[in-house]
Length: 498
Image 1 (cartoon, helix red, strand yellow):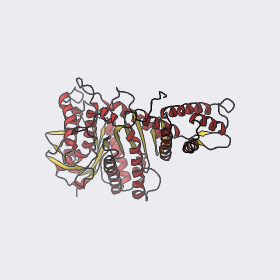
Image 2 (cartoon, rainbow, N blue to C red):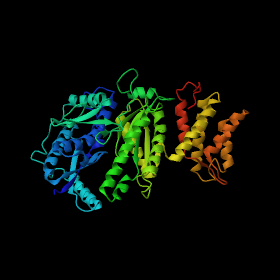
Image 3 (cartoon, helix red, strand yellow):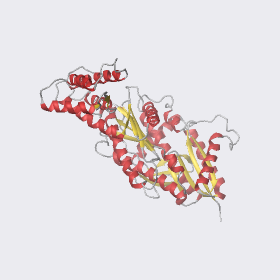
């Protein structure tokens, strides 16, 4: 009986490839199409290559272990290993050329002998050697300069095939003539593609907000104009906390595959479903949904509600599917939203900023979100959302809502400065002093509804204490959120207060 071999492939340089500037001569604007096309290409390669490998070798589809998230794992007989390595080497070289040398496919293998924990360790060590010695098995001429893919041809592939053709394609395919390409509705081998594909299909999230009266993907400018309040767009990125630890605790390959597939199907299926809801479908576009992470871009006002909905669904997913697993590893998710800062901002730069903020959030805490300059727990974000509604309701009752929010911002600056000083040096020593100043900032009124809202707002902004005051962490997020929603809106009034 033939010995079975675990063969793993992993793509390196994904971030560098996505963030690389367009080729010389690329027209200004429209960088979102190239970035989205590149992202889709990488996501599809992780799914198509292992399936094409099995089809090329005449092996059963059931030998595909896991795929997605920048890597894949297959099981092959030992006697076909040289042919499999040759297949992946040729495909990897084409991929390297098409990505201008930035994207690299590395592989590792080990025999299916012993417990999964032992096999996984051997596979990890083999992958570490492969990543650290890329020229170990290279042929002559590895270090010679190579010709990259033609600039216009590569741009045409990323912006036409992977944006226009793939958007509504029923299947994706692969051909031996072009082993580094993924094609839509054609190819030597093909597989159905959808957000809920069956065992023989490819599960992928590809929702895109479309331009008005057109079959084209909406531009960044269009998405910014669709935002409520201040026009603007941003990027939301999310990542499961400590999933690697969870996977390392698994004792069998069957559990490893089952868990990997569950996470991938959750992000692809739920993200596609949520983005198709009425409040999101014209405002957000999916960049990718990996094995344990995702990224979308769109109107800034849709990103925070979208994050809350994805977190809620992920929490339910873990409660239903991971209740037998002890510990919190792999059961929480952290996100970060970055809003474009100006007209010259590009999708690549804001995507990179969202990644930096995600690292900040993960180094601060787990199961949280970094938004509008602050890291909040999810329950604090929910409280900030309610507080924002209170601020907007109170602002709507006043003649100058923007002036009211500006005064509230001034209060936060003064209170934050005072909290950093000692009690003797600060402007506010006792909670009643803070409340008195906050009441002045909110203004005097005899209207009972306004008085009720003012009292409620004061109680929500401050954490109660007998001898000191403390601002609730979500207050500034709520205030910034409310200000963004009122700027540029019809009820903003004529006040110049900022």
